[in-house]
Image (cartoon, rainbow, N blue to C red; front, side, top):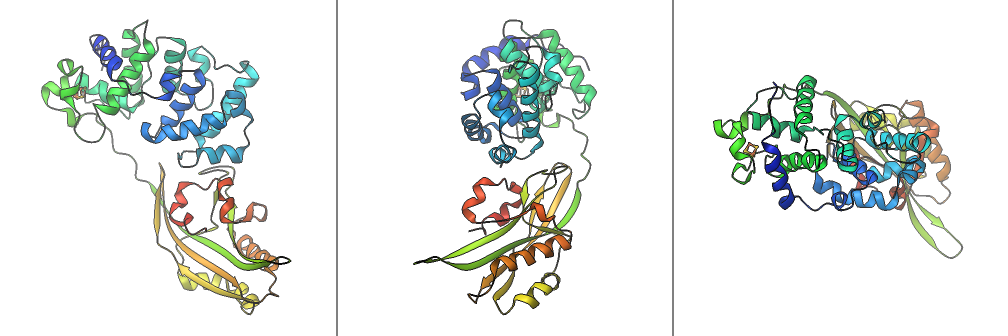
Length: 386
Ligand code: SF4
């Protein structure tokens, strides 16, 4: 449905002038900062993004640094934000910018759209905020606000509805402040015309223009067609710990090593680290059977304890992981026990069962965890690595 939003412009800009939250990428609106912040803000709230943003730009202060960053470091910097394809695309785009655009984000909307990870929303945000190009930047916040103002029951999950809104807004973009106008709509959606719960209409600068408010239908808008239900995947995670005493000339200390494995380079959480996992939820008996060959060979040298951990769930956009964990503690009881041999046997077991490939397995101490990107999906078990 076409709608004329021209009357809202003046009120929104005025409100934004006095109410915009102070954010680093607003105070220092470089192309790089705006780009990074917009990518981080997809799927993540402003308050959560602030710290990640500071840390990220401190480590990678410009496009060149981003283009050249080691993958492991990059994923680690993104740890906790999730949706890791965003940061992989950021780096791919940075590499293209270094190669084809002399290290500068292109100042053309269509050129921006060609870069990996940049869709109409991000291209609009960069073009309007950095280069003053009057193009809209429509995300879920803007769709909600606009549809409420128009009192429209359009289904905002439909691409055609978003396209129509982009066309409507393109018609009325203020030439002198396109970036501020885009931001005012987003800001209103974030703090006044909020997504969950009742919008704060009494504080809204466009209340007098808002059809949803006038008709009392704010809570019925926006309309979203129901999402497809997610696929459920059951998993068993193995927190395998070796504990032994390392003797040096005059000292000895207790060492704990944990097995982690790198995920495949394609698909969900590609290239990230995880605890070794088996398909399906296994019982303690099944885990004992799984370890049988190890137990037979090493029970004289190691105390072997298998402790079930709490179950946990992680929700991705299309999949849910339902996880059951086991803490498998292998404690050296004889000094003569060959730890490296025992580790190799565990490796063999994991590889043989198809849990991982030999080259993707590694053993780390807790202090090394800071160097490995272990996604938040494994948060329930991370605390056991000590
Ligand atoms: S009046 Fe209420 S529903 Fe309408 S745009 Fe403002 S906050 Fe949203």
